[in-house]
Length: 441
Image: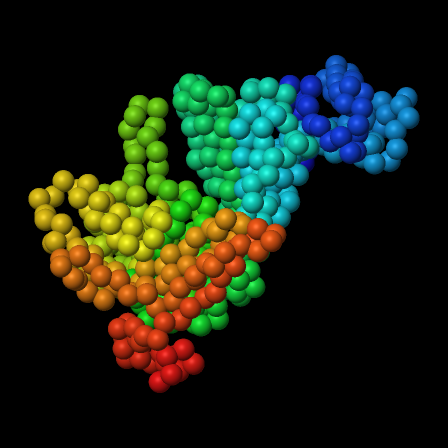
C-alpha cells in the first residue's frame, strides 16, 4: 500500500481509535493504564507530522515503541497494545481477531459491551471485546461494507452484505433498532466444505451421505428444512458439490453465500430498493428469469414467499434436480410452509390443488436441526410418497432419535435407517445408481 493511500485510510479511521475500550484483564489487568497508553499513542499519531522519508506503517510502529519505552511493560502487554492499534488502523477494530478466528462461527454485537460469539454451536459472551460507543460500532461496520459497495447510515439504516470470504453480515441501527446498533456476522465455515466434514462432525451417517449423493446425481428435487443457524446453507452447498461438472447451474440468493466449484455456474443475487424506492429485484424475479437461461439445475438459497410458486412450477416443468432451503421445524412443517407460500400468490386455487402441485414437484425433504448441546444433526430424510386425504404424505427413510442427555449436557441419540425401500430408488436405478449396501438389492 502506498504512503498516500495508507494516510487516507488512517485519516478516515483515526477517530475510531481514540479511546478503543478492549478489556483483556488477563493480558492487561490495569485497564486505566491501558486506556492512558492507547490514548497517548493515538494522539501522537494524529497530531504529529509524518516525516516524508518514513512510511506511515513504520511511523506508527515507531510511535508505539517510543511511547511504551516510558512504561514498565512485559513483552505480552507491549504486544497486546501494539495489536490493538494495528487492528484499528489495518483491520476491523475490535472485530478483527474474531473474524480471523476459525473456531468462531458467528459474531453478535448487541451493544458496546455486549458481544456474543458462537463456538462449537454454543453462544458465549466475549468479555475481551468492546467498543467505545455506538458510533464506533457504526464506523466499524461502514469500514467492512464500504469495499463491497454497501453503506449504513441514517438514510440506509440496515445492511445485508456478503464478505469476501463468504461470511454474511447483517447490521441494523437506529431508528430501526431501539437498542442501538446491532451487528450479526455469520462466518463462512472453512471446516464444513465437504460431505466428509459432516461425517467427521457426526451430522449424518455414511449411508445417509451416500443416499443424498445419489439423490443429487439422480436429479431429484430436494427441500432442505431447518431453523435459523442449523446449517441449511452449508448442507445445500455441500450437496451441490455432487452435481455434474457438465451441467449448467443457476444459483439464486439474497446475499450470495454458495461456493460451487463446477465450471458452469451462473450466480444471481437480489437487489434492494434504491434511494428513490425503486429498482428492487426479488428472488421471484430471478427465478422467473432463470427459466429463460436454459438451466440444468436451479438452486435457490432460500424460499420465503411468492417465489415458492415459481420454484415449484420450474420443478414441475422439466427442471429436475432443483434444490432449495426453507425455515421450518419439521418435514411436515416444511410442506405446510410451502402451502402457505403458494397461497401468497393470491391465486384462487384450493389447498387440495396446491398440495397436488407440491406432491408432483418435491421428491425429498431433509430436516437438519441444532440440538440443545449445539451440535447439528440431519434429523430426518423423508420422501414424498403421494397424497392421502388430499394432504401431502411423507415417508421417513432415515432419522436421528434423541434419548436423553449425558452428565456433561451432550445429547444422546442414534441414527436410524428404516426397513423401507423408498420409491425414488427406482428412479435412481434407472439412472444406473445402485445402493446395495443400503437397501440390500
